[in-house]
Amino acid sequence: MEVKVLDINGKETGRTVTLSDSVFAIEPNNHAVYLDVKQYLANQRQGTHKAKERAEVTGSTRKIKKQKGTGTARAGSVKNPLFKGGGTVFGPRPRNYSFKLNKNLKRLARKSALSIKANESNLTVVEDFTFEAPNTKNFINVLKALGLENKKSLFVLGDTNKNVYLSSRNLKASNVVTTSELNTYAILNANNLVLLEGSLEGIQENLSK
Image 1 (tube, rainbow, N blue to C red):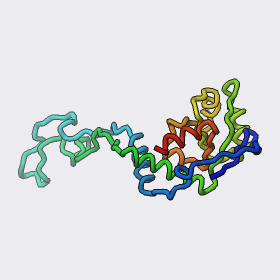
Image 2 (image 1 turned 90 degrees about the vertical axis):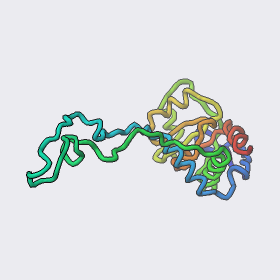
Image 3 (image 1 turned 135 degrees about the vertical axis):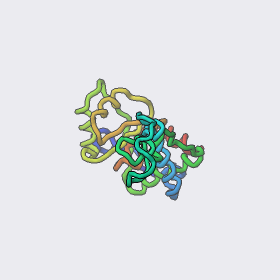
Image 4 (image 1 turned 60 degrees about the horizontal axis):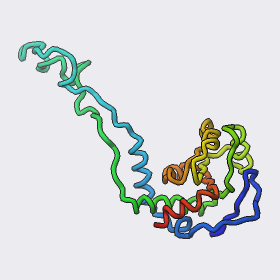
């Protein structure tokens, strides 16, 4: 699969790169994508929710009224879940929402996500670039040149580039990651995927195993 390489001004450099069909042109496995995205979102949950149950609510344990003769239902405690301020019945408890997936399935999910972006022509390859210092305006100029100013974009770097990352951090619609941080959710959550030349070898090596 041949893709033209652009510069940060959005112009063709006259060069092309070959993307591996085994990574960028497979038949997407929707169920693998679903499971990987589900796991990612589950791992974001803190699971610290908690409601006090009957045994944990502060209150007296004395019987608040006699058993019979009141004309109302019997009641034995102010902590009764039916009363205001009483305990919660089967309330939420702290728990861990994470679950495991095997590496081959996660690898298949990422390849499927990349193939979806390539098939939809929402994948762009840009030559490696950097900034002398963190500068959000410079990053916005790159987005404008690539036609991504008002779109959600994901930039994938080959190695950590602090200046590029810090330049994009204030922009909600843009995200910058390295090849080791690339995940299925991030790929699908972006309207456009921008791969820097230096990231291609790492992506294809990691997903071709």
